[in-house]
Length: 126
Image (cartoon, rainbow, N blue to C red):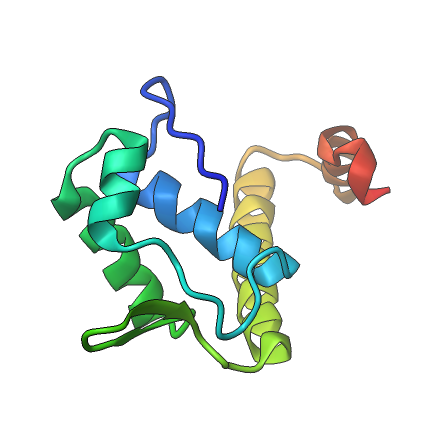
């Protein structure tokens, strides 16, 4: 499991951890049933507090992405990937609705907003 922490990133460290683990689960890099590093091992490996990694795992567990088995550790949940993807798509739709409202507030046209989106789309999504 690869995680890169950046102090210059505006997000708290626990969010950086949880977002990277989430992305690896949704992409299939981490498979259902796969054991994750222990909270302590992850903290040691990243050079962060155990409390920070515990918060990241707790958030992921709250989303249903990971499960903690008492005495055995933390594992990628068996939850349906299609359902998880639908949740993420809904989140993207919400963000796009917010961007559309902001664009309307400053008088952008649909074509201008579309052009902005086209410029922002990374090459790997084309």
